[in-house]
Amino acid sequence: MSVELKSVRLDSGETIGYRQRSGGEEAVLLLHGNMNSSVHWDVVLERMEARYAVYAVDLRGFGTSTYLAPAVRLSDYADDVAAFMEKIGLPRAIVWGWSTGGGVAMELAARHPERVDRLVLLASVSTRGYPQHENGPDGRPDLSSRLTSADGIRADRRNRRILQANEERDKPFMKALFDAVIYERRQPEPQRYEAYLEDILTQRNLMDIYEALNAFNISRFDHPAGAGTGAVDLIEAPVLAVRGTEDKVISEAMHRELMEDFRGRAAEALLPGCGHSPLIDDPERLLEVVQTFLQEGARA
Image (cartoon, rainbow, N blue to C red; front, top):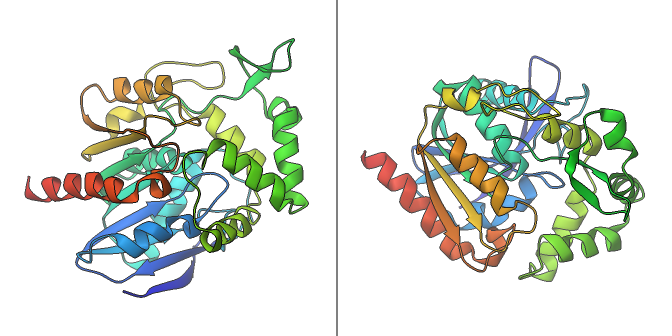
């Protein structure tokens, strides 16, 4: 099955790039995480069952998409996705979001429930966001103190170092970062990894995404960076939440928040031995879990 790189211009003026793989009548829409794009969905585009037509979107500011208007809320990216679906004539889809893409997928399902048939959340940010913390006296993040301003996020030394690497196209730094946090269990094959690293350096909205993740909160509980909207209760689609047990990005506590906020409405799958990218760590098991959920939902 061939994969085509396409683009479409939204009424907002933004151009959204996407990869489309032909398949059957059921559509699957893939939403990537921070510091990557549709390029990182290549394993799913290659291996997902032929019954599914697969669309992997580049969110605004990532990959081949434009970034004309800054966006500091995940709801902005979700509205882009809804507009994208309208433009390409895709009325409804199974939506699969990874990491930051999980937050965008949840916003899409809450704001545009008619667009989402089933919802898969892979190593997703919590319903209560992904916090940015102040540094303690020892220079390490103080987990009890959440940053509350954009200026604070932009001044953080860790964030500034990653932004510097992005702007200077410091590929060795990015590889070291991903080796330590994302691919510490298993690395992509060299040619694939090189494509990922090139793609990581295309992002133009790093600090805005950090701000959006910090403020995100669709739970019923307030946190220092944002009031809870309760929008999790507006999600009508069946939900599967998948997490690798060795994930160094999404903690067990964040995953538990998400499960608790869905109040029994989300199925759960834990992947032993997987980190933040089961796409690389154990793609066979990941696809088995996801496709079983999708097939059971289709029969319901």
